[in-house]
Length: 249
Image (cartoon, rainbow, N blue to C red; front, side, top):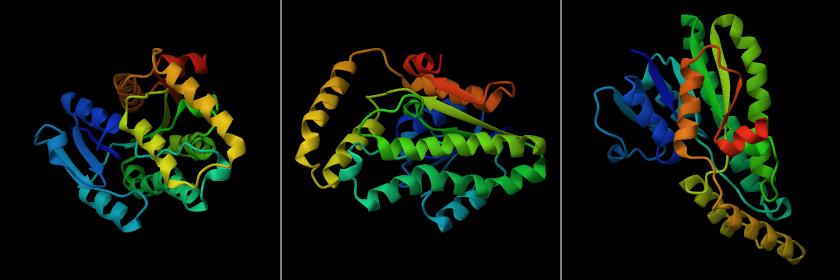
């Protein structure tokens, strides 16, 4: 039985991905900062482990408890929606620590085992905003674009070792808790300078107007992750959702 380890399983794409892999007969290591067994169906093939990807000890403990991992899905991430000038330095570092450096640390932790076995898959979930940048998302976009470039390089150096690396790029999914969290973080920053306000109002109005259009559903992302893990011939970049696929085309 193949084992998949998934980060960020408390909600959204990570939670749905864990459910899907369980349904398909995988052994699933579902990780989250605050484990909640009620989120997933009870199964002898499921383990829920605490994990904070920004803490080295937490990563070491989770990877040790997981044992051999055939596939790692790096899904954990945080958002931030604000002009760069109104974004505190602490938030910039927080976003990169989770979305970029935490992801790298997870890969570093599982690579020795995959290399020793001569097989493995690493799937990094980024975002379609790296294909078409949007305003008010410069820090988030930069953190995800860095992961894209990192994964492209990683794929080249790991392929000779029998390890595949893939990138899943979800489109806009306004109904996920991730999107809600990104917007709620606006309250953490100091108010943007008044000069930005007309622009911010226009952007937010456009976002709300587009919320009725066809966007990315969780299953689109789940299926892209599934393909990344199970199809050795799939491309390096896997857009997920009609809007993401249109951008890629």
